[in-house]
Image 1 (cartoon, rainbow, N blue to C red):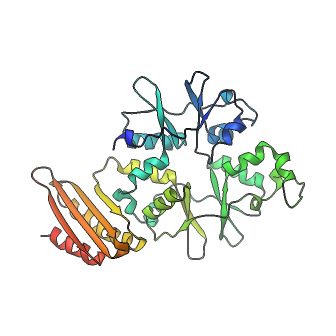
Image 2: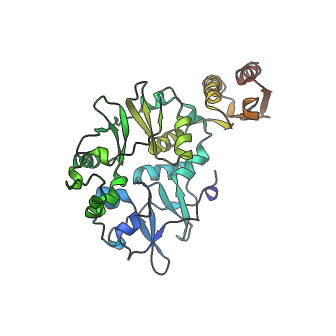
Image 3: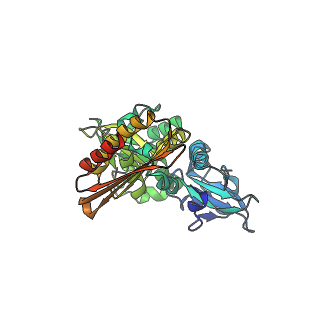
Length: 355
């Protein structure tokens, strides 16, 4: 994958070192975003990021940008994609500046644009349950009636950007994001005047229920990682909450989890899977075939790479499958089948594959 294809140059969020921190933060939409700081002579100076400016250092909202900027990792045009993903994980910034060999700023790369280029990789056909079993950090929750100050203490203690909010029955109520609180904390008096309840109690003494977002996307542990990735990309969100049959949160899949999985698998030999226009049911069928394919490829050391292309056309009325085996020596073997039933088409491919 060429880095040139995923560098973004338009809609770059730029701020001046003379701007206030609150001005810069108002241009962002999550704790992992970044505003790029440029001097009057258009020289890149650093970034403004909510995590480093507010969560970690607690800079006042009226501070000048020049006193609050953070020196984010520099992405070079020669860097492999796996290294860029690792830099995003380590820095907690999902928008990193890109530089050429002359150290000139040429644009930026976002976690979302990176994942969009990776979404057809076979690593995302894994079941969510399997991914959750490897997560080291447990789900961090807060009750909707807990005071806001308690929730803020949890955010800082665990160094996370959001908390899953539950009620007394431990059922999902929403998400509380640190970024969503920044605007309120920057000018609490103004915000309190806008409080419809007329409550004059201090902002941080109010309960979490006043600030949580009830719009939360959920999946079950039986869904696939690609389902979570699709929601994160299409809905432009940072996470998906995994719930049980009673709507009780089990865990959460975040952008960081997806990047981490890619980094772990990037050095391993992989099967390249490309799917187009597949429904949720079709993706389930493909996942079962993929597990079989992984087992088969392991027994074929002479096969250097395997490529699988599955297309759904005519609203599910036609499926086309092409399986290519690229050997270390010799010509590749290509199997092609199509039909109205994806399961039958995959079975035909499987039989030809085993000959």
